[in-house]
Length: 149
Image 1 (cartoon, rainbow, N blue to C red):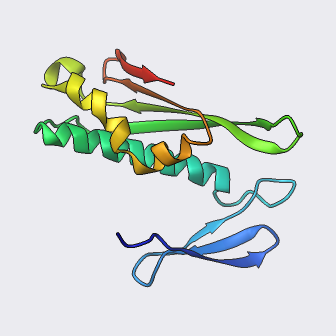
Image 2: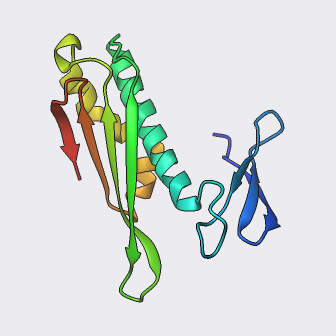
Image 3: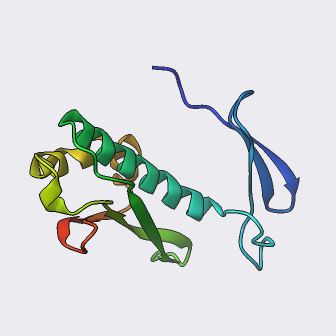
């Protein structure tokens, strides 16, 4: 497997340019005030985005294996930021909610896809070794289908 590699270059204070390779646009990050100006995504927000993106991809992949179309997915991710016992700021937990674009009754083998998709997620399973990650899936009608801490 090819390693995932990025390079970071400081632009000013806590503002960094992240380069992903020649053919991929770079991304600028910054810490929120008072450290940075908060004009760009923070590292904590990027972690949320990565967990949510990977989980959404994994659910989509699991459903596609059964030739199911869940409609456009939506995903909301929240990180609980707080202090550890030593008083240092840490991400204490992440909660991801994925919303299907259709109602559950329109999908065949949904139970099988829901039973396996988290195990397919490289990022979440790696992050989970250090940070609790709760994953909720609901359908377009608001029915809760999956909730795992």
